[in-house]
Image: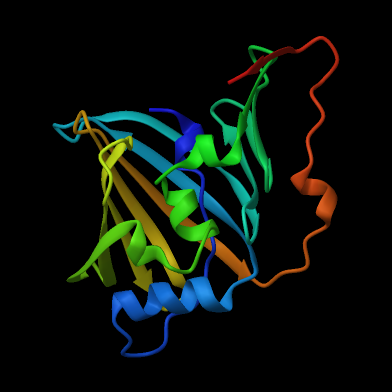
Length: 202
């Protein structure tokens, strides 16, 4: 599963007693920037662990983000609001895509794009599980990698996401050390390919 399609986030605290849908709308409406640490797991359809990774994210709506994997492999994904760069340090390779083509109906589009999310997703509250209030988002179009996206809201706002792809794989992302509406320097959302790197435009 492409890491480029796992980009997200805008994080905001949910109001006490608010539904998951209300929490998502508050998240989109009240958060201009955010930064957090994350831990990510990829499971196969039998829930066997395939991959674990950790890193940090920084986000500025609309459409700008910096998603950095630190362990076990270093990768960097940067968007300036019009283009997205995916840099693989080990391969010394950069993939460049237009933001609209890179995201489509992905989680990043849901959280970093328009507030009118119900135009792109069918949203359903699915109740409280393991201390989080969950919302399920199903893309209205079929040309998307993910069949369902679940967002888990807790006291800190958006604390977890679960993404199920067409092959039954599940990607689980948990956020920590969340800081919303932080002052983020604009240069972190720019990227210049390292000297000698292979650059692939899509």
